[in-house]
Structures are given as C-alpha cells and as structure tokens.
Length: 240
Image 1 (spheres, rainbow, N blue to C red):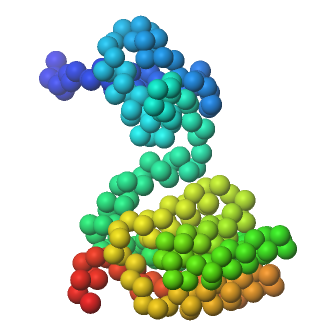
Image 2 (image 1 turned 30 degrees about the vertical axis):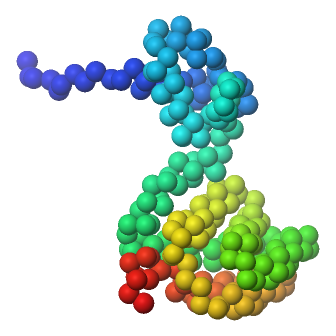
Image 3 (image 1 turned 135 degrees about the vertical axis):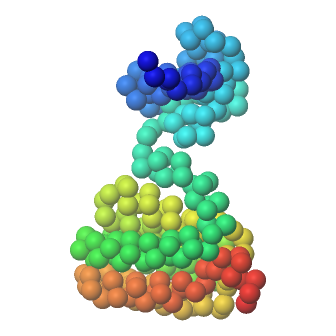
C-alpha cells in the first residue's frame, strides 16, 4: 500500500468559513438577512468564539457580509462589483510593484473602452447624452481641483460603460479606472493637459450624440493614447 499524503489539520475558522459559505451559496442565508449571532454559530458548529469571529471577518473581507459595530452581520447582495472588489487590493499591490503590469492595464483599458464606446454609440438615447454632457460640464468646472477632476473623469467613463446595460462591464470599468487613478499618489503626472482631456471628452460626446460608432472609437483611442503617458509607475516617474 503506497504512502499517502500528509494529513493536515485544518483550522477551525476555515471549517466554519466553509460551512458559512455553503449556507450563503445554497440560499439558506439570503442577501439582506441578518447572520446568526456569534453564540448561535458557536453552538451550531461546536466551536469557540475566536473561530467564529475569524470566519465572519473573512466573509466581510470577501464582501459577502457587512459588519457594523455593535450590530449583527448582514448578508450582502452578490454582484459583479462584489467580485471585482475581491481582487482590488491585490491589483493595487501588483500595479505599485510592477511597471509591466501598469503597461498591461493601460493596454487592457484601451481595448475595453473602445469596445464600450462603440456599444454606447448604438444604445445612447437623448437622456444618456444629457447625463454625459452634465458630467463633462462638472469636470470642466473642477479645473484646479485634482480630486474633483479625477472623480468627474471616472464618472464620465463609467457612464459610458453603463450604456451597455451589462453590470459586469460597469464593474470592470470601475475597477480599471480606480486602479489607474488611485493606486498610488504620485502615479498621475499632471502636465497641464486637463483642458485637452475636456476637449477630447467633448469630441467623444459629439460622436455618441450622432450615433457615430467609428468616430467615437477613433476619438476614444486618440484620447487614451494621448493620456496614457500621464500614468507613470513611480519608478518611471523618478527618472523624469
């Protein structure tokens, strides 16, 4: 009889986590419902409070439950946004340590956003165009305030992704934009090109309003190619 692999004793908290995940995925614990109390879980699984608390903290970190101080945890609604949040911390760490990863992200964003703007040109209605123009105006009014300018920029591109009607596209758009803009304080190098950004957004908007998918894709490509040079890894920025 061959020698088997080593038997590893699993942490109690991992076993509790596995059971809680089963309860959530099976629907026994539905989105919006309160989780059982810590005491109830201790009795149900025959474990101590530390194992329960560690398992609940893991679920909170995963975005599957929300924990409020002094209140019982509540099951979160699962969504594409929940999924993307799971890799957010790792993605930010990867970007901050690897210039190649930043280059890959910029290329992926270009591919993604050109596809999004083509879809938007086919689906945009007058109300959508009005929303985008309002966001463009908000960004123009934010000149001189970097934080507000960036927030309006993210909102503009996110609104384009929303026209797809696909929540996964919106979640991916949010993730990529936030990783680019926010993963490190000195990544975005302002070069006085904010007005150029605004004019490029206006050009994209005009094409969307006209239902011109090719023009919108070309305008978005030029916009992203020009702005790509503003996003530098901190190692590259130090060489400038």
